[in-house]
Length: 179
Image (cartoon, rainbow, N blue to C red; front, side, top):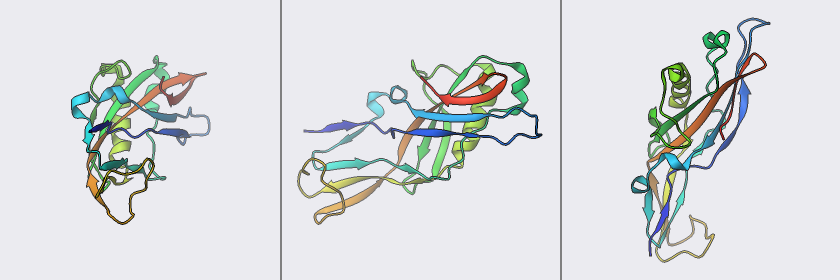
């Protein structure tokens, strides 16, 4: 029997503040969440009965994108931007593209281009502990850890989808975890 496991890493990263240019400048904040609808069923990893999967872990110092300060004066409505991040077998980022359109990830409209550029620039510099498939010599017991005798780790390239929602609250740029 084979199991299907999505490539996506469940994440909820806390927001962080961008440093204002001047003491009275508006600041931006960012949040991100995992979006499973961004990857079709055909693109999901299929594991054998003797395999488990360990998703990539983001480095704790990965910098989050900033609200583009040049857009603060425009008081734009909230902009949802989804990026698809390719993570190589060594944990480096292979590339960042707009995520496929889905209910959670709207098509990228012209006002969102600077927000996508901010998200892409930040995520392109991210690093991860690599993902891997753990291959057991036999069918593993539930919750059995990899690394025991009779197992080996196979590095795995994956694709992750992140949703960033940039918005203005009380005249300040912020980015919240999308809903």
